[in-house]
View 1 (spheres, rainbow, N blue to C red):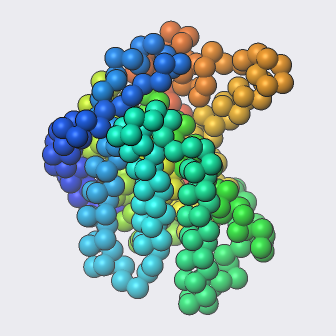
View 2: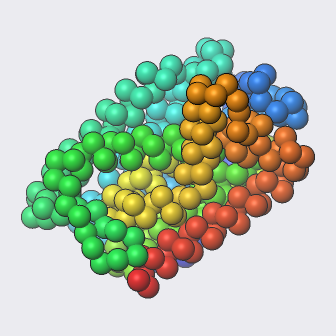
Length: 327
């Protein structure tokens, strides 16, 4: 089933991109480049953005019909789609303000955070209702310890953990979206890992969703790899982060997500280190954060940075699968 989902969304992505990219260009949805970024990025100004609608459309068009045929009665797919599309809407609003209203920073930090918190609360409520109907509500608040058979019950503390995880993951993927193909490739690898985990857990909805996103992202990479013809924008990156967090919740791999999404965690950590160091010592640890810009300014080509991070993402994914399945 996973290869069908992947093949269908790959095909849809390849078909949709040549239709949507010219539309984004005609609507003048071009990316503006921040002046404080690497100077080499200024040539990317005007490249169509909000391209996340390409792979999100492919995922919805493929996964819903497939799930309705082979996994009826399982609401997990709709939970995953709701999380992904909800965060995608927040990202779309952010992109729209940047591109159409010409406010380069988009939504304010408070507006974006409020939206992400609200969605996290709604997701917890939906999850609770589903588990009550299934009679498995007692399992909601448990999290697994990677590499062991141990589970810890957090009781009411699981609620803020879920909301925090949704916010942190969506923002981490968003921070990583700074080079052509970087997020599309690393996210495809992470979703591929969850396809394997879904197969091992025999959760068809997880398999269909993860494989669909993987296929759609591989198609998107054909147009997003250097030199990019389209950027996914916050529409795509926030949606991908929300989907990954939701997958971790459904598969009970909340802590394992830190490993499978190791590249995103390191990118976020680099920003935290940079900000903390500058505030406390007045000195920067990296030439620029997130850390992929540091390597750019060290003289690495953009393609070298991206492929190196893809390689790291693959190793993290393999480690995550190994810890989930074999230990």
